Image (cartoon, rainbow, N blue to C red; front, top):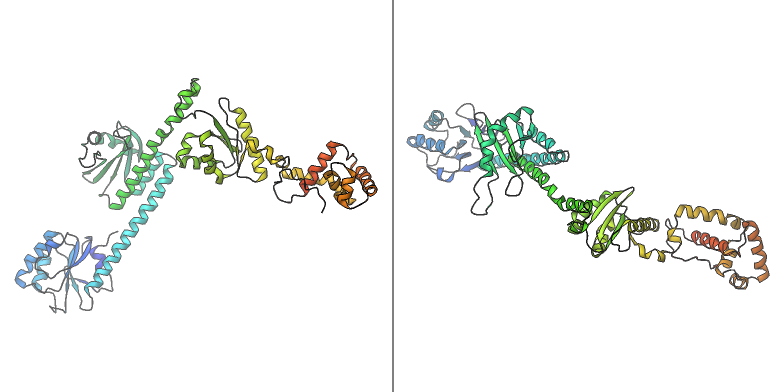
Length: 492
């Protein structure tokens, strides 16, 4: 609450004393100091005026008080012990007669101390208003996520009054409390004036609000919407005029309702495109990408939608949530831009350019997303899959289980490096023996043992392929299998 004359006088450190009885709840807007016989030209009203009475005469006391009352000052503080030892009796009598609150300021209290005290009280009141407005905006925003009805209900409770949300014709959409709906008919003439309000010459913008004062009730009506024709109206009523912070809260509610009323317009192109597809005329859909497109399979979920909605390039994309991922149709020319935008949301698989039927492109994107997730890459194109090698297509946990099972008998016989050299030499014993630094008969003996423990023939190309894969997998200790065709079969 703003500081009042009574709350200022109650501050013990100031030692102020009322000479006119009980103090009113007049709001103190500022503290002014003046020794002029007529300071009113320099006052706005609402001030606590301080003086030492330097130029005040007994004969002029009544006129002095009359001028202050006419200006609407909150009160007069008179310092004793400076020019006058006590407050002149004529001044005190005039203040009592004309209803001006008069405070005695003791000699030890400097005027600047009173000014600082009121400034601190005003600053605290301003901070309280800002805090209240911020908290109210958060509550309104949270309510707006549920719908306009919840927002109107929350607004009425924040203001301690009633609130009505009306459509452009003046019909009640939401009322809080329910009985407030009966006020809509009385507001109808005011809504008509708001619709037809003349445009301001300076900026050519129509009036957006009006205030009404009725016996025991104060009403504010605000237009909703950005266009020339309002999309609705918000009316609020309270028992007392709305303070500044309340107007801020109402303005926040109007802004949220305007966003809600304008948001559906952003989906017009998308709805038109859907209608065009249903009618068999996709070329007429404004949001349907023309020319080759790519399908992106994205693991980022809702974060992908947030990023697309935050960038103008995202308006030219069509997104569809699927099981475990999101598919995004992107014009081929925008693919690089969208990939960069979405790279931070999770792994992305990108199809080859496609036109017309996109089911095959979606399969490409999903296969590529799986490979990107396995290899730990942010973005992977379907065209790059062959370069990933066989290992890049394997699920790491399953692949390592396979390799561990296949190679376990060789490890028990210490034959892993022998088989590695044999596979690297493509089954050529002489070359494998030289690589290992052993005689060819020794190699042949070891390979017979390897075939025995494996239960399969290493000279069979299919068996050697399995061994190559197992050896390559075990040579990579990372979480994801990243090697591109590197079998690492050479012995140390």
